[in-house]
Amino acid sequence: MTPPSSKPNAQNPDLSEFHALTESEELRRQLTDVQAKLRKSRSEKTALVEAVHDGAKDALTALGPVPIIKAPKADRRKGKPEVALWHLTDWQGAKVTTSYNTDVMRERIMRFCDKAARLTELQRAHHPVKDCVIMLGGDMMEGIFNFPSQPFEIDGTLFSQFSSVARLEAEVVRFALSLYENVEVIQEWGNHGRLGSKRAVLPRSDNMDRMIAELARTIVGPDDRLIWEDSEEDIQHVEIGNYRALLIHGDEIGRNGFASPTTIVKHVANWKSGAYPWTFRDCYLGHYHNHMEWSLPDGRGAVYQTGSTESDNRYARETMAASAQPSQRLHFVEPEKGRVTAQFKVELEA
Image (tube, rainbow, N blue to C red; front, side, top):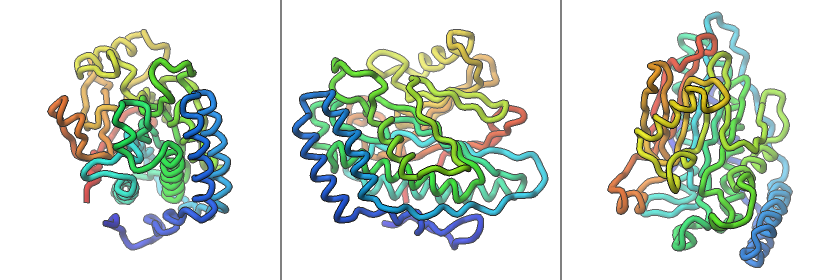
């Protein structure tokens, strides 16, 4: 299957330019070398981290020059501008189910980009939408350390996940830069990015999600219209004018990474009451692979839970009798009043 496309124009650019990052013979050679290094160091967690960092340099070299990003035409219309807010999370890159794999992941993410462009144009019919904030919410890759059978449910090694997901993140950011005048990326890491077992003696911030984002940022390269900073914090701050929100993965709340909706809302409400030292209105999380929204007790803020690109998750179906359609989230924010004005559950199945 191929994602739907629309006729390219100034506001809805041709996607082919952003699909040009393909594997070369040099990349395959680099992958073979680094995968051997990872297998050798699998029992040595510190060496594993070093091997991943070395792999970033090798993969970047193999990619070669990246095409220049064409900026959109400046929107000079009058009216109160709003900002697009993309919440992309739980891609589980390289996970294999009866209906999901690395190719399907990429297809669905590029479908999100296409739909986000169309929804942005609908908003622009009423007011300018010049800027975009992309929240990468964690679990962007599947990993190999989370449960015993995991290596048998993936279609790529740890480094393959690292490389393919980073290239996809880079494509998404480059697409956004072609659609909006300015883009900011805020990244959070998830539990699937953990290196080694829960008892492994490693800093929490040594996480594959963070490393993937670092490689993706390097692939995109410097751009005066892009803000993309690394963060060692466990909870990320989202600030768009007067709008303030928290970005978490979701496993931070509850025991063993699970909490009921009631517990999540209560926990976030306690943060908002002063337990967390930063004033915010809303909180965004993924982790549960389902699209939900719960109001906070103050009647103004909300907890926004975003779905996953994955489908047919056997663990959720068999252990929790739960299932969900693949989706991601798109909001539009009014910076002056500090609020969400429109929100979309973007369905990703063809």
